[in-house]
Image (tube, rainbow, N blue to C red; front, side, top):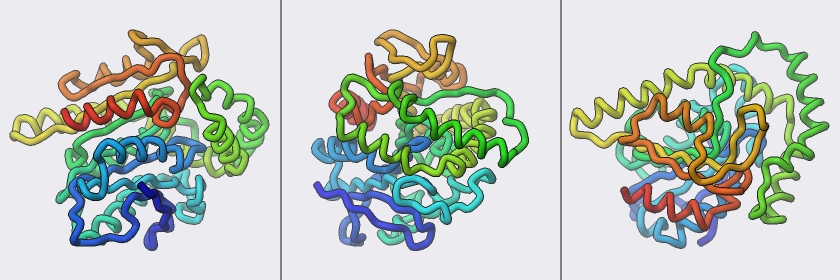
Length: 309
């Protein structure tokens, strides 16, 4: 299968897809939207897209993949969102998806939507969910974290500029904590190169907005729980959530790998707000922060089973 890169005319976001030329003779049954994390890029999803395509999720089966580069990441320009500290990413993502679906003669409520998200991208995925609701059939959330229950201090550009300098000085060493024994040399080099090119000031301005979103995350998850209960009561399908956890990002021991049976702080937090009726979990042992790339032979079949359920 060939993965193609294209650019959205309306949002100017760059994205990867398996169907570059829309055809209304090839009906789309499922849109798989993939959102990467802070400092990452759409290409991190290529191993997973390739695996899923090899196991039946193809254009012929009606499966359309969109893995986007967030503004200021990968090949998407910062100009797509000039003031990221004020939000607006979810609106751009929804606009991109609507544009692509429209080219197939579809709207969001006319096809199944599965959303994949990694790390900080989970906040964006849940922000998109807040707009689409149960149009999203499944949410696959990889190695998330919840770090604050109160809103960040007021926006201070000078402080962010100082932090950007500090991040750039330490990021290459810190990345050692994020790679695991199954991280390929090519993926490590690609990721290090991406961070070397990253505009840290811009990326930290973006993370400022999602610090505020994180502070209200309990309310978002409670809303998902409420919508699911209402959907089931009305005879509709709920949004099912799969947590794939590979590291503990919180606590006194710092970032580290986990083992089967471990329950991370993030898992505890999500369990407190979502019923096990629509929440599934999978722990990837002894690995890094990128299970959707490093451990696709393990997580790929887990995702396939989750989507079939």
